[in-house]
Length: 81
Image (cartoon, rainbow, N blue to C red; front, top):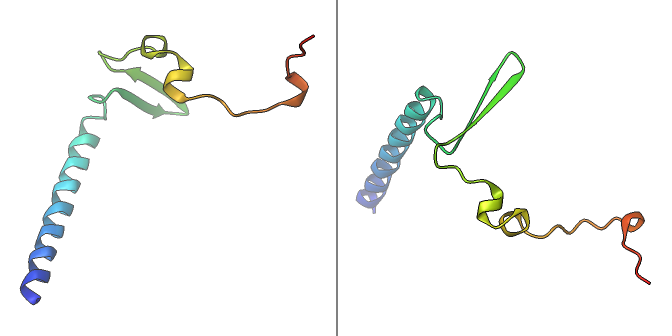
């Protein structure tokens, strides 16, 4: 049983080390390689989309991508009749 725990412990430590290395690479690259890059400087946010980013209309519209809204505002209901 101790051998199994030692093996699991080494796998966990290896995973944590690799995750830290991935985070470091991502931070050093400024996350600009992803589909969306957001950088903040002096209270100003700059958003840059990736090269292959598609607009919502190309993906089927807001309703297709984000789903139907369940917001119900009684004052703004359509009156039929």
